[in-house]
Image (cartoon, rainbow, N blue to C red; front, side, top):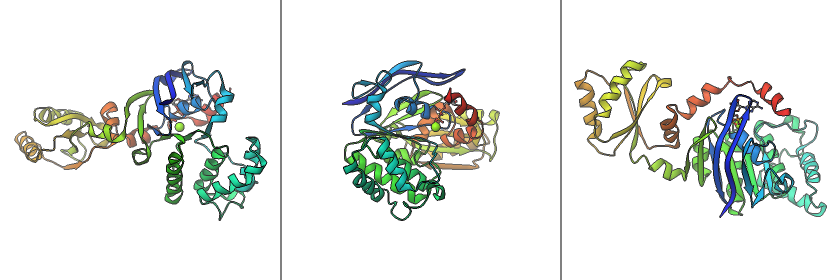
Length: 338
Ligand SMILES: Nc1ncnc2c1ncn2[C@@H]1O[C@H](COP(=O)(O)OP(=O)(O)O)[C@@H](O)[C@H]1O
Ligand SMILES: [Mg+2]
């Protein structure tokens, strides 16, 4: 059963098309991952779901309730944990949760029990009574997550919940998400970490530049390549002309497909090779025949990054690095206040 239906969703910020006709269905009780680099549109999508921005076009329904027309009802159903954390510095973690619980009008008789449970689930006993101003990034994230869970939402929306976190916090958050899923909660999580999505998500949508590249079960997406991922370099730093020549040679070899030249990694050639023992030998012979040497050749199982690379010609990590520092987040946040 589709609990969440997103249809034809578009959103512009002036001349930036942040979302372009997005269609997504999310099954109740599943963990749905949104994978994409910085600037892909993840936050815009999640904020729209959480009723914090209104789209220019399209509809979203959660449990058949229209998110745009009935935001109040939706807010009772969902918990939203934002990408940036702004906690009060003076309050302790426990005081903050108490205050949040009152904002949510949580029954006084349930309140303390609920807070205690979350403190245990997120392993916060040792520092919950310290002032939030002294917390590490991982501690802040955990408090923030606890705050989003106080009212036991049916749908939990998390925007890059583990970005930049220490391993301990990351593992605790992953563990809790798995437990919440077992209890039937629907979880929607954005990330630019392949391993996070691969490990947690039942279904993933890969987005880039406001558009969906592909969606499905992570294993199915990886398996559709039906071979091994090979990264070949004929020199440490090749160039466009040379890599095009090598590409022509590869194209003629039976069993090699999906060839992409990755300019940001020294014009390496990325392709999928059938799992046939002789293919690499054949490749070496063909390259030698055309007087190319092999500088490096690596072979691995396909990952979700291959789906991304195939569609964009870049790896997710390169796309992430490319965007870092390019965005004027101050200006964006000013604009979103309007
Ligand atoms: N308030 C804003 N004003 C102008 N442009 C914005 C604003 N918020 C986001 N953008 C732009 O929209 C695109 C998508 O951004 P965002 O949804 O934050 O992506 P992600 O969360 O995947 O990094 C980016 O190009 C970003 O620069
Ligand atoms: Mg974001």
